[in-house]
Length: 565
Image 1 (cartoon, rainbow, N blue to C red):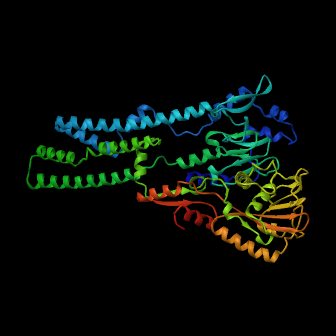
Image 2 (cartoon, one colour; image 1 turned 180 degrees about the vertical axis):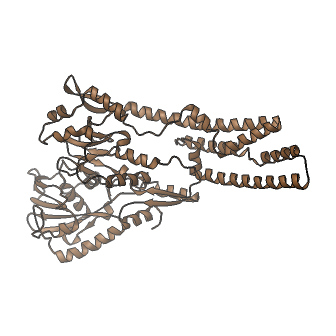
């Protein structure tokens, strides 16, 4: 997976900044002005059945598959390779000598070895095909094509998509092909499986990049997408093709066996040469007798039992792994696994859950003003609009922590205020602001009538009262110098433990903006990661973590999963 992410990053680095170039077959999109309705876009872009057939013929099915072996090819492959060839040589030599008992024994070994390897490979290939078939049969993509001259909605399989098709993606969908956003909701797309980046990317009319890649996941929103590439022409398809260049490599175990065999062959040839000289030149022995003796020596040197012992041992291991739910595609995979010295693992989504989480006990509060941890969390949650609540991992983390807080106790501010004005997060402003008014039915006189809340980057929540700040509101928190020292010290401590922080400030009834606290959040490690690493290390395998995160986050994660720092 890490190799795939490296290749994907190379492919993305090579993409032109901005909108993805539309291939020649999809130039019709460039004719749109940008103010068309959904119906006009569909009428202009939807493909007819004839065009779909032509493009399917040209580009093929929308799938990325390895070349599948036929049953005959699987069977023939069992008789190729260094070890089977050695047995075959021994078989030929015994036939030349007329030693038919050994001939039959070696032939049986050769066939049994082939049957074991073929059975395991065929069984695994069939199991994989059944799984893929079930997934493909269950998956249906909503696609719009022209029927009788009018756009019509049809349900198709993923592999039936062609470049130029207009499809609909929904929250939770895996994007089936590379495409460009046309119209609909603002999407939040997670490309973690491709690039390792946990934060979703926003895609809508306002964004510079409106492309989305096959294999990414739509977290939120529904939108129409024009397909720009399918199958091996997608970015992930190109990365897969780049990884497959040069053909399959021999497994480490196979390389070791080849080395052993080469040494045996070399020693045997040396002995044969010496015997030829001694028997024919020195002792003047009969040529026929000498050749028979040398052939017997060569047969004895061939380890005919080694391949079958090896394959049977690997087959037993494959059966045990199969009982645990693993599918072994071929026995050489078992060889790779048994020869592994170092395991390199991606961090995000593999060692961790790829989900930001707030640890309540780590929330830092400004005790100078009497705020509690629950106050920090409640005020931060109130500074999230209903539309934005499910759109990014930070707001999702705050919402989840708030729901847990509501179950454990009576909230102080929640459900007692209405939002009168809201400014969402902006990449330039780097904070969110909202103004709230107490509900008329709230009779708690201790609560302020109005609250102005802000959350975001610590520096800008502390002080943004400068002419160059592009935000809609400006302030400097009370007791800035004193508070800043405490906040930065707390932020530094949390940073050492790999926490990313969100600052929260509030103005109660116009009495001045006061710093409330810091919300620490991090991508937690999976519950079984440390135990899994201990088991792997117990088998003599070194484990390495690969990540693009900051050094302090990487070190903290390493300590948490007992990987070291």
